[in-house]
Image (cartoon, one colour):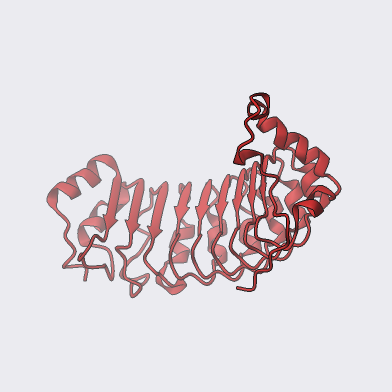
Length: 273
């Protein structure tokens, strides 16, 4: 319960002095059905709020409102098992200064389009949830996003609007149910890392290999596509040249570590999760 959650005066002073608040449920500590009154008092001045495992799945938008945290730049609500209904999505979308958002390790089945209103968002981590889809309309507005982690979900497709995320440098979508890489990924000129391990990918669009000029790390392990098929895909030579350029020092010293991994397995792997 909120009233039973241990918040010391020293913590409150630190929150107000630094603009940073952290709540974590240690061994035997109670979980919150809502925010402690002391946290709500400090909310307008907070820039960073981190809550790991401290919110109960029984929390709701009334007991754990987000509107008071109007100055937040970083928000982390992780490992709480929160369902989608527990979050005040409209208030979340109104946090216009929010640059980093982590909702990792919850029980989210959907992301409402309100997340598309986070126009300053640079990093979004929604890994380890139950997501079956992503809101394409919202993704079209993520033009400042540099990192997107949607790994360990139940996604069957990536919306074509991912191609509108013009600033994206890292896309982590491993351990899903993806069978296709949308051709629109080829528009991501700043993309450096694309991880699609443990999916159902059978082919890579040639345009992705050819046109993603910054792509150095492409990982497709534990997929039906084999390394031989990847090598025979149009555009591989251009991607391979960039990949090798990244590891010139390793090649020069004749030390070929895991960094020279070509990105796929010798034999197809079927994933039926």
